[in-house]
Image (cartoon, rainbow, N blue to C red; front, side):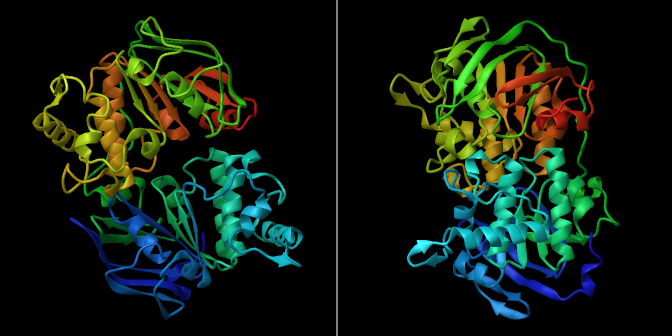
Length: 509
């Protein structure tokens, strides 16, 4: 970490920023300062206003009131181009890269250098290598982005911002899809950046990382700044309480599992991705009633396609899938759902909700044709509305109404609504892919408790998560997936966190 940021010049200041949307005030007179060479961690629940504030700084939104100063000068971005021109860069949680292009082409995209009408890739490659050496960001300039692992793709995103001369970097959930070793590498990069005068705003839900890397911590709640502290003065528990407004149980409490009959049986499964590459290659696994099998792995090692095959969203090439004794290898999503299977998808906006539909409609996406929501072709609107209200109340989904479009909710509240809907049915099998991605500690605590509750009720749970801490907190058995294969299956506690991290990265025990 750097020294106390208050002794350094202020490079960015937000003064009394207010931003309103229909039915909600996202930012309510928010003020903060960012100093040269420091890491400012920004914490808050889903819907607390973090993303709105960052989008204002980066030119995606305009504030309704208040002002922003960059290097002491008033600044109001009308677009990300304006922000980049003033030295503000943003590394998004979901990488903004074109997979079929090389690193050089991605870095220069929108800022191309030409010579005699042709792209000058060599000059850009030289600049990339210079940035790589200076900040400790190793990357091969001519490699295709599609061939890079997640950690390397993130380095490309950071290089892209630095290539555009960013002195202020906004890092949005930068460790969400990294292995523990890759997260450690990122911390090292962040320290290198601040040592050379860059200023970082670090948004994360991982409180341990905040205490490790931040110089100062600002906490938002319900659109307002509710506290500022330093790692020296704080703990994970105190930060969680400041974010949520109550004490939060950071450790999952659960009894010993009591496995029953086999609910999910997968044998020698092979699945291809959209490029026709075999990304699930001979996977076999079993999940029993009353048991949680966690699949650990860095994203991009076949987990997505495995879950899609299990839920009927993707055809398999070979092998078999049985659920509760039924062969569902070629079944469609409705047939699988009707066997008592719930699915929390990793991409909530693509596979979990219809963003242009209101919450009422999203609450019955799988049940709209069944009583009490319909009798034949006649819908029961009252039952549909009441069901949505019950989901919102039971899972504390922050929304002004169940009649608003799902797109108006924050990402975390969209996730909570999906979880509420899936848990509202009678279940035999729960397939949960990244169930707490992008949500706050209070919501994580609640969802983890609900998953354990389902397990204890006799539901079989297949948990897929890139968050090793989540796998360790919830799983009874852990299977590590690497390059389409299950490379190890162990009881939780048999291997250390570091050993599992090495397996996730393709190393041995």
